Length: 483
Image (cartoon, rainbow, N blue to C red; front, side, top):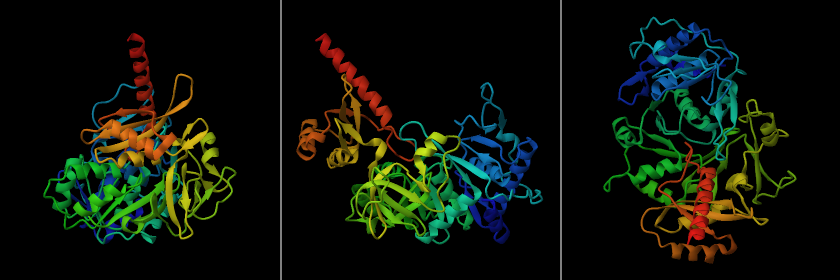
C-alpha cells in the first residue's frame, strides 16, 4: 500500500480530469499531476535519498509543496516538520540558508520546466510497504511545544476510509482547504479528494477564497472556525451564499453558535462540525443543525471509533458524565515520534488520551467542555476557561476571548482574560456581568488585544497570553511604586 496509488489509478482511469487548480487559475489534470509526481520522485532518487529517510519541504507555493510531499511518499520517504532534528535533507525554494549541519536541496533542481511534463516521463514504482511512515505531523501545540505523530501509509488509508462512513461528501468534490498541508488534518482532507477523483482549488491568501469559489465552482470549504470568522467579516454587505457551495466543514475547535448562524445565512446552510486529533485521526462528525440544543457538542462518533469519559483512576464513567476523554480505533497512532515519556502519558492500555475533557452520550454524541491542560486551578478550585469565555463572548462588542491562569507575586493562580473588541467596550459592565454570572470564577484582570495568538488550526495559544499578563502585572506594580 502506498498513499499515492489511488492517485495513479485516477490518472489511468481519467487522465484529463481536473485534479488541481493552481492559485493562478491554471488547471492540472490527473495525468499531469501523476507525471509530475514521477518526475520529482525520479530527481529525488538522484539525490541518493532512500526509503525511510526523513525529509522536510520549505516552499510557499502550494502546488510544489503538495507534489513534493506526494513524490516523497511514492518513494517511501517520510516528510516531516522543518523543526525536527531528525531531518536528513530539506527541499527548499528561494535562497539557500546558511545553517550549519543541515543539508538543503533546491526544489528548482527537481521541478519540471513545464507545468505538464512530457508524456514519456518514466513511471516510478511506488514503495509498497504499508507500514512505512509517510509523514510526521505536529500536534496542535497549544502549550507552545508541539509533539509529533508518525503516520504510516496504512494508517492514512484507514483514516481516509473512515470519513465517508459518516460524512457525506459532495459528488465531484471541488475543495478549498485553508488548513495547512503540513498538518494531519489538512493533508488528510487533500488526499481524500485526490483518492476520489475530485479537484483541489489552491489559494495563497484568504482574499482569493471568495473569487475562487465562484470562478472554479467550489462546492466544499474546509477551515478552522477562526478562519471562517475572518472570511465572514470580509464579506461585502450584499454578498449572498455562492450557488456552487454545498458544504463547509470546520475543525480544530468548536464552532460557536453565533458564528454558525451568520455562516449559514451568508455562505452555506450545510455546515459540518469535525472533531479529531493528530494522535487519533477522525473521531466524530455531525451537521451543525443536528447539534443545536447540545452546547459544546462536536459530533457523533464515526463507525468503528470507540470513546469513553473516564475518572482520575481511568474508570469509565456513565454516559453523559464529564471526565477525561479517551479514544481507540483503527485510525489511532501507537505513540509519539521519538518521545517515549510523552507517549507513556497519552498512549495507555490501547487507548489514546488526546487531552480533552467532556462527555460521551449513549447515542455517541461527543461534547468537549475543555482541555485538561487549560483548566485553571485557582486555590484548589478547578475552573473551565470555556465557561468564562462563553460569558465574555455573549457581549456583542467582544469578538474574541480567552481565559487563563497567571501566578501572582505569591505564586497563587489568578484568573485573567484577554479580549479582542469589535467596537467600544464598557469594561465596567463586562466586569459586572462576569461577577454576576461567574461569581468567584470571574477574571481578576483583563488584557485588550488586537488579536489572540493562534496556531494554524485557529486554537488559542495561552502561553504567550500568560507572558503578556505577567509583563502587564509588572508594569502595574512599577507604576504603583513610582506614584
